[in-house]
Image 1: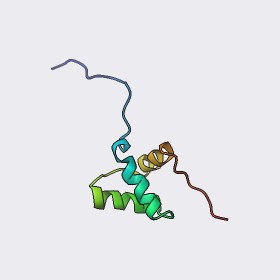
Image 2: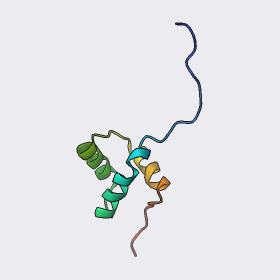
Image 3: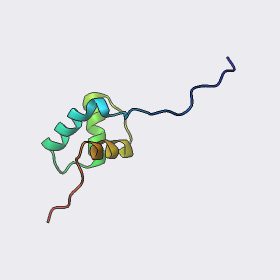
Image 4: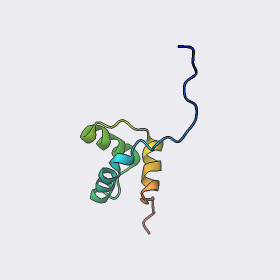
Length: 69
């Protein structure tokens, strides 16, 4: 068909259904890096997500990077 596809609209965050899993992984290993978190998500859950996607999901659920004194 030559009809145009839908354009625009709100895209639901890709990791929204897995926020509880993300929170558990970070709480189990508080000093985990984004790359390590990416590997865990791929290995345990089969989720392929970019580092920026993971970073945005962590910020959305309130887990931010804080330096230790």
